[in-house]
Image 1 (cartoon, rainbow, N blue to C red):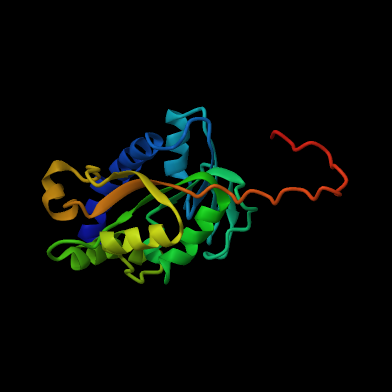
Image 2: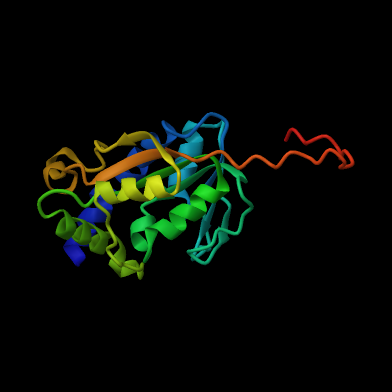
Length: 221
């Protein structure tokens, strides 16, 4: 993989972090407290924070690295150990296609998010989309021991999961320009997307009984 890895690291990695942080910063709500799920070393989150000082970001990952750009806590890859609606936004950047069932973790993100879930991932649509995505994944991750189930969904399957989770597509951008111009014809092709998904409002508590003793007023924070 030597020469391929060298090209990838030299021409793709730094550009990817810069482009992604810009695209993601554009769709995160103002003043949001953000949880970055599967954040790695937190570089993308740190670059977002540099562009958006109004945001507060922290991360979780299955493997917490010795040095990270943001606060990172461990998690098991399936269950997010945070209360319901505890973050304004939950971010999943090239994470869901590394899981055996993306809908499980997407459901967890929707549970924890108060306002939206922000996703960067892939759509397996078009000629040779699957082999192209597998090649990109292998080049970027195989040497690092990252799980590669190659679980890419076509757009209609994303929409079905979004509907089942009672979420709404607020923005969906599939022209991201992650790659240099000379590589876009092969590796871009609308195979990538950044989306902001609105989450359903938390269920309202039942009205108090007429005979119930009044409790303290609700907190505003």
